[in-house]
Image (cartoon, rainbow, N blue to C red):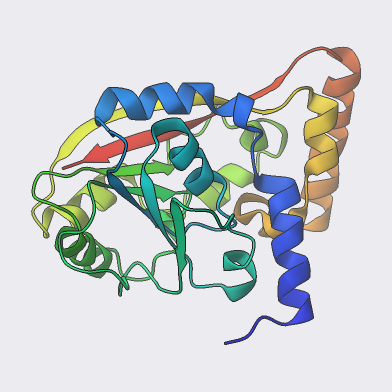
Length: 246
């Protein structure tokens, strides 16, 4: 379906608010490299690629081909288009790729948006080469205390509590033959300062903030602005989990 003007505005706001500067992803590059050897010419399947921030990062970091699958037309339109990246219309439960085509799969902040995790796991098993890993970057219930949004907007933890747990995610993938290989938290510098982080927040584009009521959101913004004034030079460092299945 063609994107509407509202869809395009949302996608632009999402990119502004949610994409992390490349320099802020240094620890993620190292974390991925520690889990899978991605040589130039390999293929990474980026499922729920959004506006392509990690698709372009993988291509630049490792020289790999990226199949960036994204169901929202407006988001897909913002995925960078150059030689190593191919943007595809599709969902996790019905990947538009051939069998055994990918050396790794990346699911960045998308597990909680997938309606049928077991079906997605089966599709990933089909699309991946034997032994290839699934790398899941996500917030999980009970493990999000160092997420900046949870720190300043405590109600966001309530939202994360509705996400699939690590155990539920592993169980869904176990049905397709995947086992848990690793789970660890990874830091990311979302902005060079807390003030810059506050300026980038767009409530409607953030799944952790959309469910807050107006009062919760405004109190959180006041906490964040106060902290930014007290610690003007503090970078906005947040943490998310990397769950590796193979």
